[in-house]
Image (tube, rainbow, N blue to C red; front, side):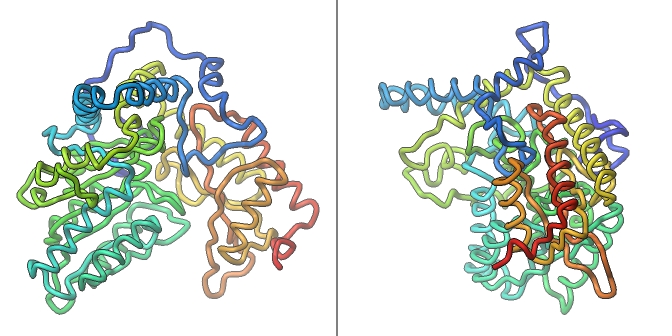
Length: 449
């Protein structure tokens, strides 16, 4: 359970969740710092990789296990398919069921990534419009900061089917959960104007850019009170980054990547679908001979492809159990370290964080000096490239447009991540790079043209 010093479960305070069973470590000693660095020695040592949030990471012991599975398949594909594939995926699903506290095993499906999971849910919503179960103009609510691919999926499935989308515009920087709840309620009220039905709410658990932990439990509760049909939580950064408990959150659908913060090789995610009549007609977009056998079975076979990322999950559980406190300990230390590094950078540059420490998980937004002259999304992309190529720093940057009347405000925020392989020197390298640019009188206008 989260303590007062790091993020509360689901962004909410005063929450008590019973401890879930965990795999027992075979070793009485925990992984050492030298062993951690060895596990990630394949990382480019010339780069300060403070961007785990984009692609995650995978230790060498897991990639070795994955390669062994790949060779097993290639050596005798038929035997692997008939004897190992289904039992292996079932084992992975069983472990995930325990990890996220799902009530039923058939509520858990393993898919490629959270984008695939979104397509499964939104495809079902589109069918409801096409079949007349929903009326033209019925509403879906989503956060303005929803991940770009999910926004496009909503456009492709729901808008084309006749649904109306309302975005929840959240402030940034954000100072409290109350601000988020206030804006969410406003969007719901807008959605129900003229008797319209709100059929779906898409809620991020941790927004990607800018990053903040959303109080999902409270927003789901509000949705139930306001008669929203279904709630889909997009937790791309959920597992391994913040606390995830299906019984506590109470959403209809919940997805999280496992290659972002849970050390799996790319790409793998789970989709939780709360057991109900609404979930019986969910189907994978790739149709095979397994169509109609339930989403979990359909997702376990989408044609001949590499399933090793799904099969290596048990080895990943063993890996995280090598750390003191397991995945809970990893999350706690990552949070504490990213806050410490964020505060160090903000102090060095005379800027601010994008949210209070308790509203972040293993990523945090840090303001960049205003004198850098960041004035567009294109500026952020070019500055990111410049930091990578000139200074060996990999970090995404967010453009926050100034509001009317604001002068000399911070318009650029870096999203820094902290994962077990990171060192303080990575963040000092970033600090020194920005200080050098400021000292040289650099502005983003020099990168234009």
